[in-house]
Every structure is written in structure tokens, then in C-alpha cells.
Amino acid sequence: MAGQSDSELSLFSAEELEFTAEDEIVEIVPNLKMPPLNLISLTQVLEAERDSQEMSEQLPFHYVEISRLLFEHARDNIPDVYMVRSLIEDIRDVRFHKVETDLEAFSGRTIAVKIKNLSAMEVNIVRPFIGRALQAFYKHDSPDLIPDPERVSDSRPQVVNNAPRRQLRR
Image (cartoon, rainbow, N blue to C red; front, top):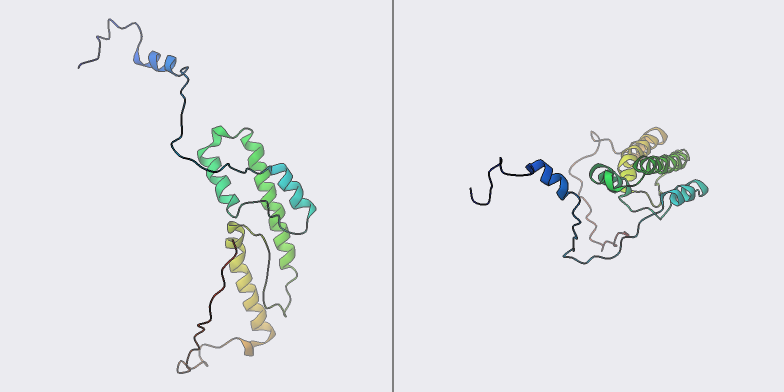
């Protein structure tokens, strides 16, 4: 083939050439513009979470998923990866403890639950529990409030709410 030389006449093998090429500095010029990344200081977030009764607003909504992806795909680019992973787990533990203490305040008269600044993963974990817990309260507190599928007639007209919906906060 053109461009290849006889291996007996070569001074270096392909592997040796690849090894020496690893010392070559390559400059990568991105072909896009993006706003600066505002990274969080994990130790400061952990301290803030521990010091406050409220959930911190400093974390992104998807901090758990983002950190998991970074640990999976960019492990080599994270200095002290084990310490960072430990900090993320500590932050999650502190936040879940706050959620647990908020949920302990449930009573038979609870009709809604509002916990501010939950992350996507926290909402995903807590939502089914809260729904089942409220349903159990309603069932045991006043069974008349829960419609019994056998007693409810399907012939009743359904009321449609055509009122304008308000925008969800991000």
C-alpha cells in the first residue's frame, strides 16, 4: 500500500510511534459559544444544608443526575473524585433527612404537602410515598371523602375546568 514502508526497514514500531505521539500537545478550539459554567462549591453547599432547616437553592434541579453522569463519563477529569462523590452523598443524606422530618409532621388533617427546592430525583422518590400516605390518611380518617368505585355512578356528568392554567416555576 502507498505510504507504508517495509517493517524491516522501520526504526520504530507503530506502538512506539503512538507512545511518542502521546507527548504531542494538541490545541482544541471549540466551534461553539456557551455561557460560563457556574459550578458549585460542594463543601459550602453541605455546610449550608446542615445549618438550615430549609432546602438549599444552590443546587441545580438535576444535581443528582448530573453528578452521576460526570462520575460515569468524566471520572478522570474530576480531582479527588472519591471526596466529591462522598460530598454528593452527604448532601443527599442531609436533604433526605430534612424531607423525612417534614413528612413526620403529617397528620390526619393534612390535605397537601409543600416542600420547596427539591431536586428531580428527590421529587421522584418522595412523590409516590406522599400520595399513598395522604390516601391512607383520607381512608382512615374519613372514608366518606374517598369515592368508592363501586358506589360512584358513571352516569354523573364530569365537570371540565377550562380556566387558564398558571405557569409552573422553574
